[in-house]
Image (cartoon, rainbow, N blue to C red; front, side):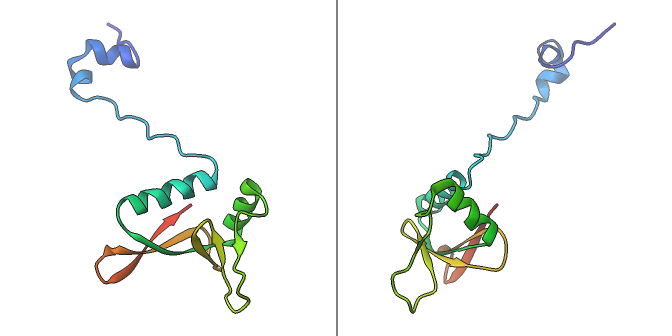
Length: 116
């Protein structure tokens, strides 16, 4: 007796039908800008307030490669050492990845989401 492989086995076997195969996770967008924009929208839809973004050098370089020179605009006030990604304040950090600092997720405290 031989067994059919793959999905055909799921249709003929009671065990295969009882334990469906896990679905593959949705494809992750290749571009950092797409992932960042989606995460920012998700946080705001949840009702949280995004305070600022901390972005490492490799991620800043990716943003500039994907969106050009205007990806992160410098603040016009020379006393402030920050930039802007759209309407979000950006602070350069020595660590890697994108750190999204927000309020509202934990009452009375700041929290963060990390995006790779």
